[in-house]
Length: 424
Image (cartoon, rainbow, N blue to C red):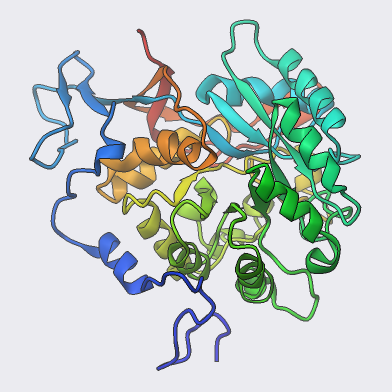
């Protein structure tokens, strides 16, 4: 029997949060519904508008479903939304940082910056120094705020959490199981035995734990690592510390969707990447081995992709944008031991718009990109706007920088939506 197939007649999610349970079939029904999309909930309608390229506009608070189809009187549509944030971003360091930071700053107002450098960012002092390097790499006119994180280790002290909170620039702590992904060798080996005092301090300071949700036991199949992590680590952890705020990063499976939906809203949330919304594991092998489609967590079956799309486009507040944009030099991807990571920062907003348009849910895009993340973190929503214009454009085949080149997601392909700064 396929390990990713539910056993007939069994509970499809036996390890959900005890406080609340939801059926995945109810989530999928949203995606399969043939009727027009319903108006979004009030939290997602604050500033979403649709405008034609000719300048005509219609406000969305209406009793009628939105229509985004072109007509002879409207040359192309555009979406004016609150400027998004990226709640999971890798900016690297050195020459690579200098090159990639402007890409994210051009489209996003803020970003949760991952701490898996060499050496990792394990202290508040190191995070403050890294933030200064990021700010220096930005264009002079950039209005971009890096939100820093700490790298959790077996030796992190509870006192460091208080120092981090008082710094005013550190907003979360990242859990990497040791060996799970890029630069995770210094990660946690025993969260229950060595990290509980730190996690208790995080509750005191209302600081979320950001989880790379995969086990690293070599006896567990690669495609089951997320499911097993939820069952053996994450669910028991939340049961032990129910007041701990958790973001399950870059979810890849229907199991993760079901788990997040089973927990009380506001306690557990998830970031979702463009690759896990648009690609399944076939993308790794089409026309030969495709290193630029290789990321961790690895792409999964089509059924999992559909479940994630259904959850994200349903309007649920539990899911928000996190690109997991992870640049690697081309020669490090196209090698005998290629690095895991997909570079999506320059194309992410175009790809998310593609997903929501194909699902008939563009009216819910703004909440996913711009509202749900800051609401979960307890931060104010951005005040500025960004415009997504319906105008085909071709993604560059590569981006060259001082030390090499990077291949972006969807390199050489044509996308239909292009983001620009909104004129106030």
